[in-house]
Image (tube, rainbow, N blue to C red):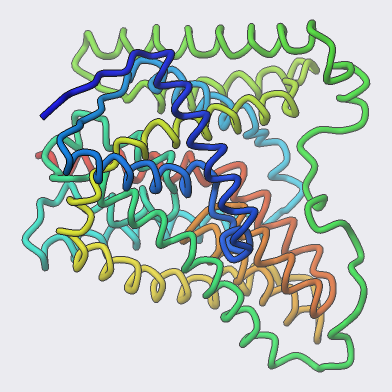
Length: 412
């Protein structure tokens, strides 16, 4: 077996080529774009397949991991920076109920994952990778937790979790639309094709025109330097207190420390009327996540995925049932509060579909589902408001806490 170890620079080059490959494939396969499958995921699986073929012929490739770790910290830091908790007041009780639904979903998904793991004779620590880390969290969260010491006892946690996360993207896009459409059958048909009352992606704006004026144009280097300073300071503070707790026997994953520190930073900045530049933070986070996913999926062990096919196929089927149950009860009720008649039915149905989209896959999948339904059946502005607010502000915080607790319990 001939082994070739690529350094950090060449690992980055291959990751960029992987994303370019995924983008090209998605452009030629519209079905992938419809279900919001990220280019890094598509390209990553294809590169992993190519590397498997090369391994059969005696060539094994290894990749650098230091850059991947730094990208992970950047991504979770930008997630935290976008969590402006003051926005929760705008949604009132409806947002609180959807946040509660997210918490229930995280717990329920991990209970289902624990049941599936036990049925197949797998360790309890694999439950979160068959549960909320993979489905509610997605690829980035899966890869982050798979590398933590608490997950060391879970065999093939990374490979199983990544496969489940990918199936979740597809299931969320398909079933979200199906569930929303079935719920809408209860509504009168006369308003089915009413025009949208507001832009689909503009229901929740995490930055304003005043923010853009204050922070300047995209091309201004000062704007980006300020953002890099915020990221560097936040990550530095996070790693400092995380290391301090480690010396006292309290282990907090570095990416979780960055997420929590960023949440505190952005809300303190709002309190003192110096809001964080969320537009550039979002772009930095998107780039970091894409590169991180590409680097992670390039090393995916597809043989391990095939060997665990029964496990991987069982978990999504059960997770779909659990997610649908919460969506059509609690989430549908939360979004329809304050509305009446056909509008209440539409708001509830759109919210339920969107909840299934991000609860099984990712927020872009949820938004895509809600967009398709509203284009056919009319506007549902409250559904966009409550689902987007709750998902963007508390989803990662709640899921991180539940996953941490589940892994800590499994490690005892």
